[in-house]
Image (tube, rainbow, N blue to C red; front, side, top):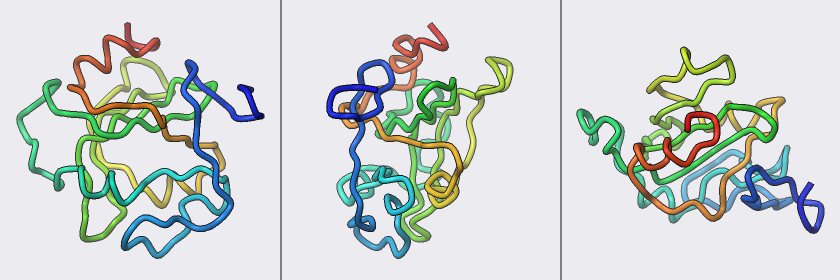
Amino acid sequence: MGRGGQNTDNGAPVERRGNGSQAKGLTFPLDGRRGHQLMTAELMEQLPAIGSTDGDGQQATVYLRLFIPGSRYTLYVTEFDGEDKDTLYGYCISPLGPDCDEWGYSSLRELADSRHITERDLYFTPKPLADCLKEDRHTA
């Protein structure tokens, strides 16, 4: 537990709000159940469309880091479906171990509704996936 009663993972504070998500175009509460805003209107505008970074591999830019505190699970998001406002694409550090880390799709809605507390790293700045993996304590 960090200062002010906020959970942290590697010193990264998390944003907590009690009202529904204010992100443009979202019609479901991303922060109502757990109090963690996972997506913002600014991030929705920054994230490239699904499929637009194909072939970039570890040089793909990560715009969003989602994680479950106390777990190995981390999702480095590189793309977002701006039409359905739900589908994320990125590299997942699997809670099952390094042999299960992989690129794939995730549902923003399912992460928000998960029984596990999924949080957004508020101080994350966009950078290539290769740099994220060098900094990640689970893959370094």
